[in-house]
Image (cartoon, rainbow, N blue to C red):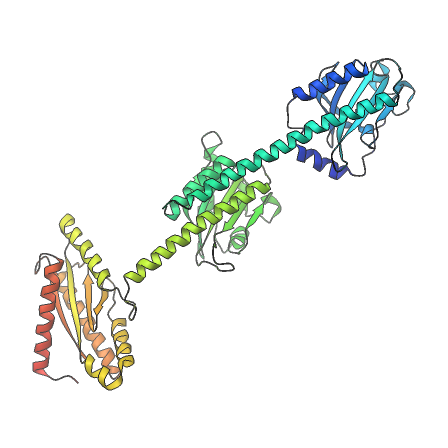
Length: 505
């Protein structure tokens, strides 16, 4: 038997076959009923629903023989899909296309009639065919009956496709709703990412996924999710270790790509100049989605992204999966921006707007923490209070803008390793050393810092001095409240002492 030529629309026909997912389905009662009805109405011993892929013919329902598959080269139905008309072969023993076919030579097939199963756009997925073991009339009435029964088969396939599409749409809507509901929960970004990644692993095939901060030194994993115990978690963990240990910005094509802006879905990683370390670790399909919600074109430094991996065999990212991943990126991105905004507000509430030092509230919180450490771990601290002498003169003679410059210049000189500076208001500051190895040395270092700041502003031409009062807790005060009072008293004593010795410059 000679093999049938390929239809002119073969590529589109195969794509339609994939879209209908008919090769994945088991035998179904609806097709069995139609083939049984076909044998009864047309009076033939054999009827089948056959589908043809690139290589084989597959029976999805069959009356008169066992269901099975044969090479496409041996398929009579491969000739029936070449035109939209019903193919009728009254006597295959006399047809040069089929005379050498084993079933024709054995006498099992003499009559053949096949109606193509046509999609709405005209692609033949296969046939509804009938055979008989002797020649017999098969006129226009029988042809039309077979054509109508083939339409019934196609109607079932269309119904099945629409049902699948509705089911997928329903599932996608549910998944998108679940992700949207996460945004209403007061979760930290890592918790939000963990919940979102867990949902993604439930809804699609993923072996490993993570929320990353991608720094100039490589990725930092903030939250990761590995496949469940039924799907080779050891392979996923091995990949995670390779990813974190071996991927660097300098030598990895993937890392360089990650530093870009766009959302990327690679169905087959091996076809995209892969990083050998990740290729050898089993990476086959990958997606990454930078999180830049609310700031189109903006870039985080370091920027955050979702990174999702399929190991072993490549698997295309379906449109539904892409939509779900993009919504997950939006959800986690919202959590990150919300956390950033809250942090910004908290920082603003604890920061002096003029000098950018911590404000009185920040000092109070630091002292509360210091007293908790004192009570629980018996760790003391050193507190200093500073006041600028001569501030009124600067404001009166040079104006308040110059006075603000003075406050900023002085504040900029107060910070040092282990020493935190705060502005209490006006021209008053506080210094706090929470970890003094030697309290006496910490006191001397604090005084030296204030003296250096004083010399700095005087060198800029400001006629001011600085008075300092220092208290060691718990040796000189039992806690923060008493320490602040004592430091204030000592600061004013220092002020009076200096004024008695020499006037302000």
